[in-house]
Structure formats: C-alpha cells, structure tokens
Image (cartoon, rainbow, N blue to C red):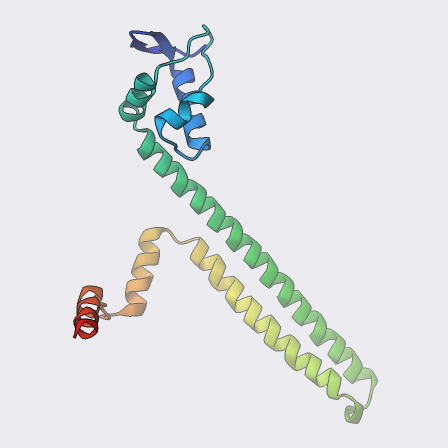
Length: 179
C-alpha cells in the first residue's frame, strides 16, 4: 500500500490511489471531473472520493501540467518511431538500388553492349536510388540525434537574417480585403 498523504473530510487516500486516479483521467483524454467520476474506482477501503476532492487533487498535484509533459513525451516517441521506420525504408531502398546495379553489371559482363540498354538503365536507376536513399537516410539520422537547441541553431544558420513578419502581412491583407 502506498504511503498516506491526503486527508479529506471523506477519509485518507494513498499516493498510489491518487496516482491511479490521475492515470485514469489521462487515459480517458483529460475529461472534466464530472465526466471522469464514473471511471474512478473505489480505493482499498471501499471509498470513492467526491468530485470536489478529485478536482482538488487535479489542481494540487498539477495534473494538467503533468499530462502536457506526458503528451510531449508521447509525441517525441512517436516522432522517433517514424524516423526509424523512414530510415529503415530508405536503407531498404538503398539495398534495392545496389542490387539493381549488381544485376545490371552482371548482365553487361555476360552480354554484348548492343543488347544492354536495360542493364545500363538498371545501373543508372540503381545508382540514383542508392544515392537518394543513402543521403536522406544520413540526414534523418543526423537530425534525429540533435537536441532542440542544436536544431534551432541549425535552422537559424540556414535561414540567416530572414525574418517573417506575419502580423504585417495579415494586416495588409485585411486592409486590402476590406477596401
């Protein structure tokens, strides 16, 4: 049993139970407390907290802030997964490109040059596919290993002194549309 930390007029609730309520709230998409209450189980003593108690926990323990941190972590993990999948796909494309080159070269070595148009084309396509896939794969790998600060610095380096003033653009468009 978790250590007791919360007393209310209804009784005493453990840290584990309060955390369980948080995870239920989070798993249900961060609903309002009245929508959440039917999903809150009884604690180990058979008690169910009142909505005002759960609302107090939400404020006191920063459920919204913790859920936002968890959402960010989920987004980061999903992005990493997609980058890994894309990198694997590009590696596969590079391997296919290498095989096309090999088959084209094998054909060229065993046939005369006059009948080798398909072999030459296979070599050209293979080289292009391998080059494109390998370069993009390396770029994705490099970018996925950079932290936010390095990414922002790289973006600043690439953009140089380019500055976008969205407010002025929107204001001038609004004036033009309004005339």
